[in-house]
Image 1 (tube, rainbow, N blue to C red):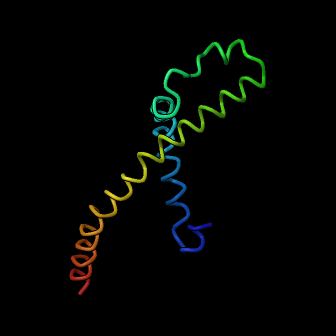
Image 2 (image 1 turned 90 degrees about the horizontal axis):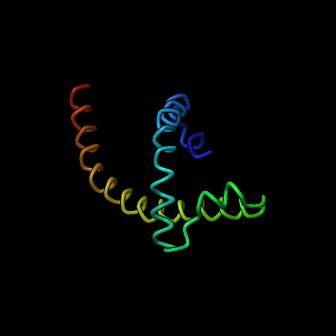
Length: 104
């Protein structure tokens, strides 16, 4: 919805999403582990809960893992966005100025 509102290039956005998909899948495990370390040390979900647990236990464990991963992502994403914003803004402003000079 934001991309449509800002009139962004939809094919380019979808291409970037598909290109980033393998990275997203690879980062699931580290985010779950980091979130487990941050939120519930010593209470990690074992594979036995998935293999021998009831449906309710499996759903509860999956939800717990998702919350742990989300918490870890938030802890890392907020500073990363700030660093990238303050680091890339001057660079991109300079690129815009140089590109504008070349068009003249």
